[in-house]
Image 1 (spheres, helix red, strand yellow):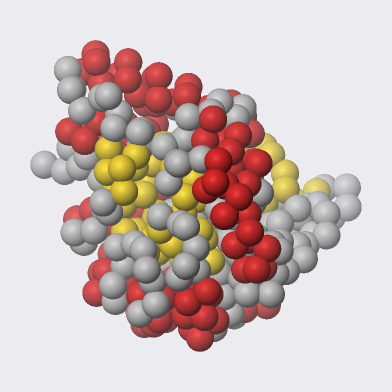
Image 2: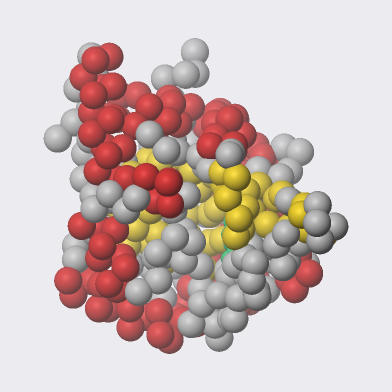
Length: 303
Ligand code: DHB
């Protein structure tokens, strides 16, 4: 009860949300995530035609987290609509589609095609760190392009629109303000942080794509600062994502200003029931600190 919350009018049994990119592909994998306690599920990003990913190696772990450049592999909108239908026939957990595109027009077209899908929100991934060569600079690097992509989707969205931002900008507040003004219903912060790892023996970067997106505990302080800064800049809710491993991490992120928290890499380290584990841990912290609802902690670090 203490963990029940709401995001853009969507009721969640708890504030843990599967972050995009981890298992959110098929109806059966998403069903497993729901069974294991996630308050909502974000799907892996899709584009119109689908895409093959990068060749191996696509991911590597280290003490601080994980570096990955899988290359946005997906089966495209048509097959994804079938997975959404199948999931919703079996499961009532809120489901967020995630889309990426090479152009503002493709963003708009994808949103149009999701119009009749039984999804609860659309997240637009304008911040993938691994796509520079193919797609140019991510849309979320500039307030102008970030706002254009947001406005294009807003026009056709039948459900709330979440915009996922990169931390890799000099001033995330100006990007957040721009997407809010362009019609974003919420902001997801942050996407992975661009990074690289080198192999001494081969004298080259380890990942096929050379660089990748860093996630896990190493990026938690970066995510906390971004969420804190965004909370001061906008009125729309924030899905605080980046390095959340424990219930304690989740409460910290909510105190920074997040309404709900994204959990991704922690599925790898703490297993698929990480959502249940994080919820139990959050409940212990809330009880100990004297809160009756998780909603009470949102933004408390701002004095
Ligand atoms: C990929 C996409 C992302 O948005 C990200 O943060 C990391 C990796 C990818 O599919 O390569």
